[in-house]
Image 1 (cartoon, rainbow, N blue to C red):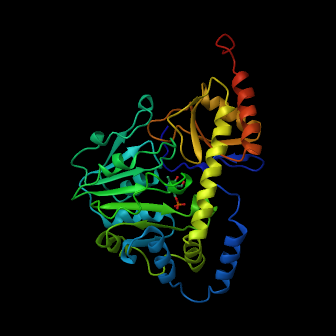
Image 2: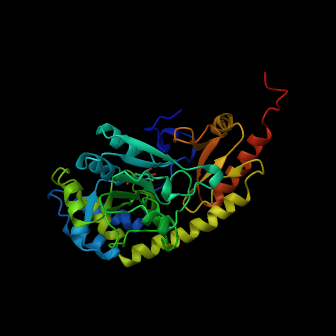
Length: 347
Ligand SMILES: Cc1ncc(COP(=O)(O)O)c(C=O)c1O
């Protein structure tokens, strides 16, 4: 089943613990909520993007004309699809599906570059068609949680091609070792970032892109006037300070510990796909569709895998949470997997 518009939020329901959506926090931190509340007081005026653009540019060591502020990473994918006229767009899968949805909606030919689980979901740059003049991939990748080395991603950049690197989860990895956000030497690279995940801001709709000034200008030309609201701009400025970035870095370190705790407690019949590096893990669970349903009955929502091109009903994506949540989840999963009917019991 490949419903490209299915996302983790569709898995949620009252009474279920959310391990389906990869947003770190239930709510933005108190200091950020205070910034947002204050910005609402200033909302009578039209938004002024200048301070936020300057803050984002400074955080990534780039000139301001290489920064595009947007209503989330999702908007950037639509802008790319509307602004560019690719002869052939290549999308690396499995990955977040909205870029492909946006490209298809704009009528562009899309080819899928399918990475393989038996290869650890490793990026093989030679698998991307040479004639693709638009290439999209995620790093770290949703849903595999694999972090491709910067060199492998950079190898896809070339003159005459736009390379979109979805780094919505880059700040979940301590030190962001594979990020291309500061790389100005590579041709045509557009790095897409989001405040959604680390700052608990999915509902605010706020993100940005970094790339060559001419490309940024083409994308901006597709935006309406005032595309980013005053609260979203306030969040962008506040989350780009050294102190906020240090907080995100500390959170990324916590995530590493929490992820190790979760993985250590999974039942032996559950396979962890690839080498997870982000705030979620991709599991292969025998009889995954039934297991997912059983987990829901026990109060746990996990993200089905079979809507991602290249994955199956046995793939479940699970958000990394604090051990107080992860450990009871691992125990529930162990019980559900253990309760699987034996082949003789299956009618
Ligand atoms: C890999 C990836 N990129 C981008 C997004 C969308 O981010 P935003 O909320 O900034 O639009 C998501 C949301 O699930 C995602 O998983």
